[in-house]
Amino acid sequence: MGHREDLLEGAKRCLLEKGYARTTARDIVAASGANLASIGYHYGSKDALMRQAIIASSEEWGAGVAQVPAGDEAVPADAEPLERFAAVWDLFLQRIATEREFIAAQVEVLGLLPRDAALREAIGEVLPEGGEGLVAIFEGVPDTEVDAEAARVVGSFYQALLTGLMVQSLLTPDSMPTGRDLAAALRRVTAGEVLGKAE
Image (tube, rainbow, N blue to C red; front, side, top):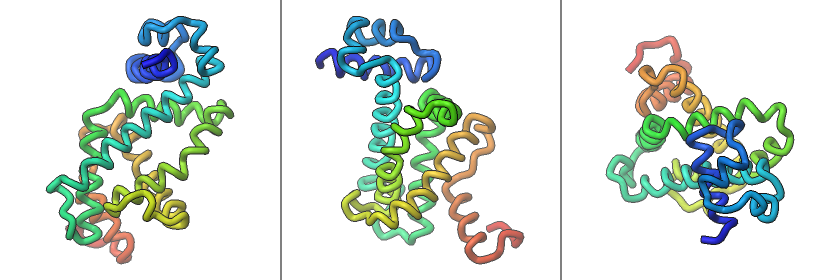
């Protein structure tokens, strides 16, 4: 790897170990083996590098989940829609439960968005792609098969659920719902039976 890639890898490690706001340029240099001047040369600033690190980390995390459903027996190819919904959420929930440093970094960044226009803009640029990727994972299809309207509407729904589950995992990790719980909730809401008997 060259210095640019080394810096990005170092920044991603710092993101997990120290968090977004607490990472310094010197931390990244120590983690990457690059020199201080190379941050400015390759990324313009430490903040620009950290923005790239949070986006790259998120993309890698999503890609890791995306690779599982296709060959995993937990998500049968012939599953009914709500069964698939539950099974894929269970895959996400397993990742959330075991990768707390990543989840903490994601939630930290959410709190910074109102006061950091550059960070908000950088994440806003990739948000539609993230929604498209989520729809593809849940439908078990390539990203190229997801149309813009499905990405906007359904992708936003999945993003809202995922963000909420990430926050909830940090607050009450011992009372997280299962994929089956989420499917049951969706079924009850759409059937107008929210106050009915739980299944």
